[in-house]
Image (cartoon, rainbow, N blue to C red):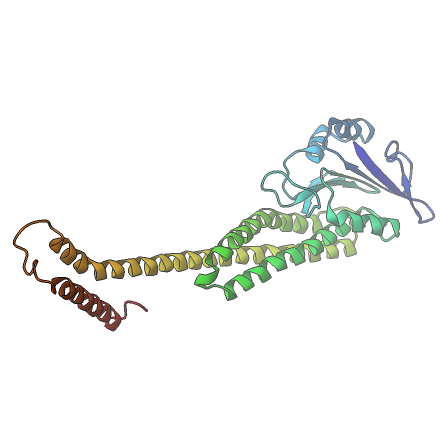
Length: 317
C-alpha cells in the first residue's frame, strides 16, 4: 500500500504528512489518498480510519460504478476518470472512491488518475479548504479532462463521414468500429456519473457549501452533455458502419457484374470453339483452309456484338 496525506493547519497552510496517524492529527481538514489494490488498505481503513466494513468494501472493491450515497453525517462517492496506466478488460476509465465527512476525506484509487495531479496541485496551493472543495475539484477536473477526449471522437467521426467513399472502405471500417466501441464504453460510466453528481449536489450536510454544490451541478451538466454526445457518436458510428457495409456490398456487386459480363462474352465463344474442337467426322468446312479464319472472325463479331449490347444497356456504369 502507498499513500499520501495532507492537512490544513490552523494558520491556513497545507502540509504533507505521513498516512499513519493522519486522521488523528487534530487539523481542521485532512485528506488521505491511498493508491492500492492490496489487503493492507482494508486493514488501515478498518483499524486506523475506523470505517464500517461496508464502507471499507466499497472503497476497495474491484468493480465499481459511479454513485453517491449519504451515510449518516458522511458520504460515499465513486467517480470515473481517465488514467495514464493500462486498464484490464473493456474499462476505459479508472475509478476514484471517496469517503467524506466534515473535516475528513479518504480517497482510494487502484490506477493513477490524470485529474489527480491537478487536484493535488490545488490542495498544495491552498485552494482546497474543506471536503466540499475537494470533491467538487475532483468532479470538475475529471469532466474537464474527459471533455476533449469525447470531442476528439466526434471530430474523428466527422472526418470519416467526409471520406465515406468506396476507396476508403478498408481504411475506415476498423476506425469506425474502434470509435463505436469507445463511445459505448464511455457511455457506460458517463450516464451514472451524471446521476451521481446530481445526487451529490443535493445531499444534505453542512460540509457542502453552496459554491461546492454549484460546482457539482456544473460538473453534472457537463457529464450530461458528454453522455448525450457519446450516445450521438454511437448512433452516428452505427450509421457510418451501415453505409460502409452498403458500399462494400455495392463494390462486390460491381465486381460480380464485371465477372458476369465477361462470362456472357465468352459463353458463345466457348460453345463454338468447343463444338469445332470435337474429334469427329462431319463438321462443316472442317477440311477447308479458310475455316479457321472464318470461325475466328465469327467469334470476334460475336464478342464485339455482346460488348456493344452491354454498353448500350449501361451495364458498365
